[in-house]
Length: 327
Image 1 (tube, rainbow, N blue to C red):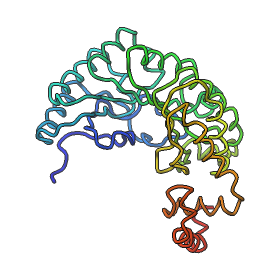
Image 2 (image 1 turned 180 degrees about the horizontal axis):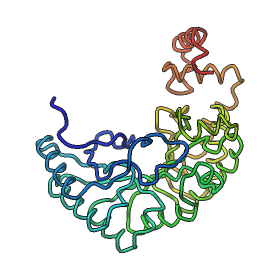
Image 3 (image 1 turned 90 degrees about the vertical axis):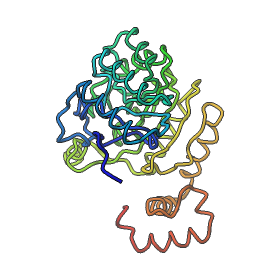
Image 4 (image 1 turned 180 degrees about the vertical axis):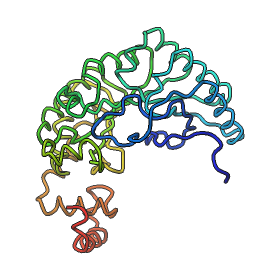
């Protein structure tokens, strides 16, 4: 297949694997978070509506009538665009791809709150009806420590603005983001904000420290201590147990997450999800390490796989051969 004749950004949410990708901006307008190095050497820029329209038409020709139902706008924050420009792009998309039922984007709280309620309604009515929001934490201490550039108040305000006009919202939470130093505060205050905003979806991600990132430097300076996998499961249990009265779909859904079976609809699945977390936490240390290694080596998909003698035996042999890769 020939190379794609229009720009593509470096990232998209997991749920947008089958979506049309159209780039409206390059990079991230904030680009200071200590845990992120994705846009480290990329200067943020807005693409012109003419550039974007040209890409939409190129995509239309390239995909030759493919009936896309979903489209994701890249890169880090389409809401930084002027409302009239964003509306122009959305209109052009719907004209070129009339089968679209959902257009989505990342939505940064501190940018969204600069829009008026009328702006938000126009944007939603024009087709941008799903937002992925990286709140990461509901704790002001954690947000400040990782230089996120948003506050719990802006998270709540922006989430309410989106909900008021009928936008579907996904809130991303990063387990371990407060380090061992702020783990309990991170869990409880994140749950507190989620209880207020009741997003459509809650997605848990597991912290990873990237070489050269701000967290990497904080670890070297010993101001950030990376939690163990077991500590992050305990942190997640505290967060989930503190959620109350909300109707979100809750999931560990990225390959970096240890317990992918922790997914379900709140409130009815809450006890089942807590039971899975408790099953892992009740294992003795040797079995926890065995599962972690087996999961990271690709032998285990979920805790139940430890009951399969064949898989368990193969995982055990591999763990003995390569334990230093993961400990």
